[in-house]
Amino acid sequence: MLIQDIAGKPAPEDDQESLFESGLLDSFALPDLVSAIEKEFATKVPDSDLNPRKFDSIERMDAYLAEHVGG
Image (cartoon, rainbow, N blue to C red; front, side, top):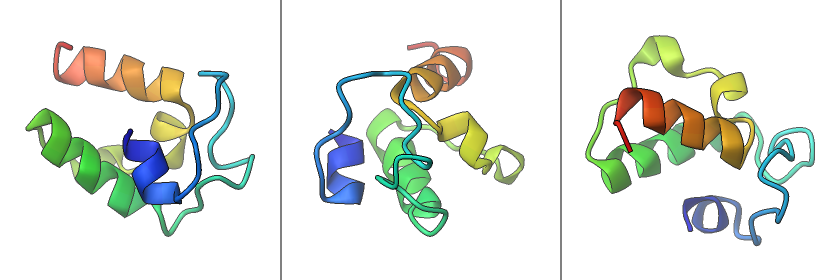
């Protein structure tokens, strides 16, 4: 899983848990996470979307990808 690869720790079981507030990820990890998402899903995340709120939880990432990648 991407989060585990970036954080070096298991992803939370709760899809709504904040990855940033929990300390699993920090703002320095965001570009790595977005880069991994781009590679995994063959998409490009625009700079205007580089906002921790959009990628704050597994649920938010799923919603973002569903909206922007269709998957």
